[in-house]
Amino acid sequence: MASHSGTHPLPSYLDPNHLGPWGVYLQQVDRVTPYLGSLARWVETLKRPKRALIVDVPIELDNGTIAHFEGYRVQHNTSRGPGKGGVRFHQDVTLSEVMALSAWMSIKNAAVNVPYGGAKGGIRVDPKTLSKGELERLTRRYTSEIGIIIGPSKDIPAPDVNTNGQIMAWMMDTYSMNVGSTATGVVTGKPVDLGGSLGRVEATGRGVFTVGVEAARLTGMPIEGARVAVQGFGNVGGTAGKLFADAGAKVVAVQDHTGSIQNDKGMDVTALLAHVQKTGGVGGFAGAEPMANDAFWGVACDILIPAALEGQITEHNAGKIQAKMVIEGANGPTTPEADDILHDKGVLVVPDVIANAGGVTVSYFEWVQDFSSFFWTEEEINARLVRIMKEAFAGVWHVAQDNKVSLRTATFIVACKRILHAREMRGLYP
Image (tube, rainbow, N blue to C red; front, side, top):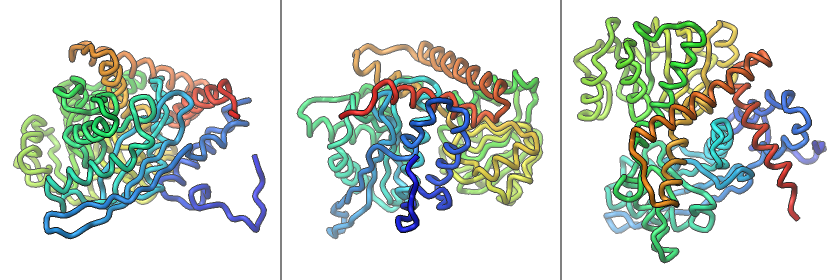
């Protein structure tokens, strides 16, 4: 590893003391390096994104004025295949965040062994402030700006925070118009009528449930009667909560941007999902009592599922958590300091890079179906998803047991070895 003289300070994104999301990721790589054997000579590869594009996204607003938004697309690594990762529209999007999310996608794709590298995109915007027309113009302009680096065999975006099937349809159409032919495989998470896959919307939550059941089985925790708390009740948290409830668990607490609610006897999850659909959040749900947001982390439960944004479980609230198991539905919800606190308390953390990989797994199925123009049934998709998730989790579990490390470190060991082995075999060109 090259030494750095005092006259050349590290750029902030390479400085592990600069703890934005990227700094958290760098710490995770440092923790795994001792387990990489001869591949450790390539580890710097993981600490530098292959390509980072920052674009200006100007649009005309409905009132006739011109607004400018900052957009990003980062390709962290493409040694194992094209870049793959979502696009988020959020007012707090930063380059550090998008870089970290792209790196976690590299890890996630390698952990479940789908043939992708990691990428991520975002626009710093609060989409709630835009009309539908403004949102479409923003999406299309952003797609045109990043069009130089995306493509079905280069980098395949997907939905993430505040983006959905409609936005993917606009992205696919814009890219197709620019290349002169319909390219359904340029994005995943599309509407089914435009080459989207059945089962895609529920896939991430189904993956969270699948690995949660496997972890419970291996640790001897019965799902029947288990108490579950969920943060975030959208596609991921809502789907996982419903599947756990259907399996006999009780959802006793839920938190989202509209507030926190609890019911010790367990909530009617179907009714709660209908309430969220109608009102936009869990706040005000008649089948539960409101609770203070801070109190959510101390709820008596067996399984805690953070399925909102990153950085939610920190050194300040990790000590309150009573759950026996944390299953990370969101990307990066637990800081390294909180990880250590939970580990010392004996809480099993099933990390995001394996727990929420169901979404990208079914995105891979969608991409394959688009290439072949041959589509599978939802039963086939769910069966293949469950098989891949179970196999991936079993592999990670064995590595954790063999090396006496956390499941997060074990997932990084599996994934980093796959990425760096591909890098080593490919060699450096020219």
